[in-house]
Figure 1 (cartoon, helix red, strand yellow):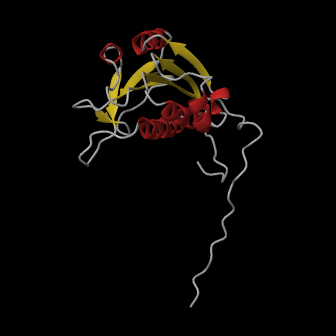
Figure 2: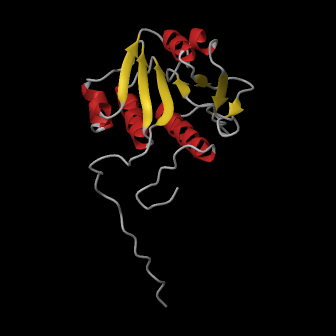
Figure 3: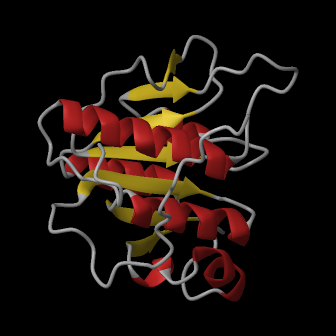
Length: 188
């Protein structure tokens, strides 16, 4: 007995332009990320949810950069980016501009990112793969969120962390009345 085959139409082409909707009011602060490939991945994620900007800090790869470009696949030209000498300086400037700033860190007692109510505009601070978010920047954040881990390791790849946090920010923004962006399939 044959099982029914579901016909699925895949979206394989890029759009010629993004949907006519405002950008997600989230800026990502990348604190001394060692891997240009991780940074490129984060540019892809930021472009996918239309995050407003990325701030690279310290020795984080900044466009133009060949390894970043390889992973970003053109998204480094689509997401606003600026460089700052340190994440502490970036956080201070964002807070002065009215941003709610949340570090994503493995801190004891940190709320799970999906349990923390975001405020917009928001800035999410992602730290070095081995060292985390710098103490100077962490001290200035309004909140610290984590991605709980049940395994032996207490953290995941910074790009994967960015994905979870950005999509949670998008979900909360839409629930709070932000412009609902629709995927290629038309769902929320």
